[in-house]
Each structure stands twice: as structure tokens, then as C-alpha cells.
Length: 131
Image (cartoon, rainbow, N blue to C red; front, side, top):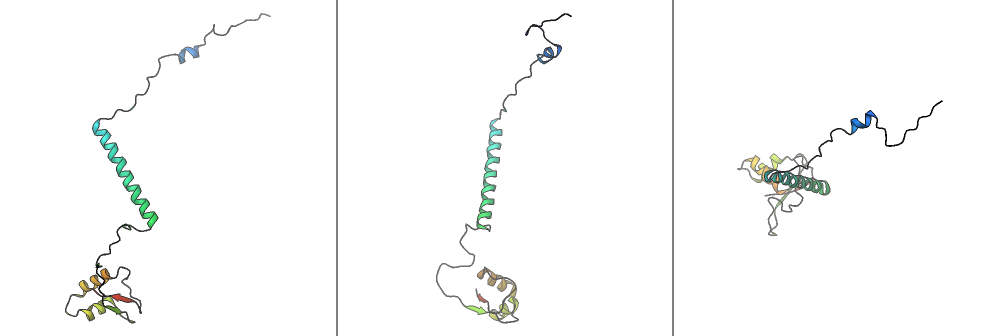
């Protein structure tokens, strides 16, 4: 029986020579032109704007919450006339009573603008502010 002694580092296998073949080139960082940097910056700003708008809507629960001014409201404290909704009343009938010579569609739009919480379905006992 014979024994063979192999010292470390003296013998190379075929696999180790395959691994030490040509080295892979390092990846270079992406180089952007001035226009490319502007495009990336603009895309980032759009993403920030959209995210902030979505967060505003989620937090407040409605779009346009930052605008406190209601269309049709006046800054003066002049009292406005109002009408009490009776059973069977419609917006068309109320518009005909308050402005018989005007187009009811225009009057209805003005009533709805003056009453932002009013819905197209009226509830008896509801008070509508007249324009």
C-alpha cells in the first residue's frame, strides 16, 4: 500500500482554472445628461405632489378641503330669506313659486348653490336659503 501526499497549493484542478478565466467588467454607474436629470427631478416632484394630494384627501376625507370659501356665500352678514319645505314640494315647484317669470332650471341651480348641504331629494321640514 502506497500513500500519496499532496501539499496544499501545489495542485490546481481544472475547475479552478475555469473560474480564474476572464474577469467580468464592473458595472459603471448610470450617467445622466442634464436633460435626464431634469426629467428625473420632474418625475420626483410629480410623485411628491400626487402623494401629498392623496394624503390630504385621506386625512380630511374630501377633496378641496383646504378651500374654505363656499360659492354663493357673501362676506356681509345680511340675512337671507328662506323657505320651509312642505310635504310634496319639489325644487321645481319652489323655483316656480319664488321666481314665476324666470327659468326654473336657473333658479334651481341658484338654490342648490346657496345651500351646499341640500340634496336634490327634499325632506319636509328642511329650510332652504333662497338666492
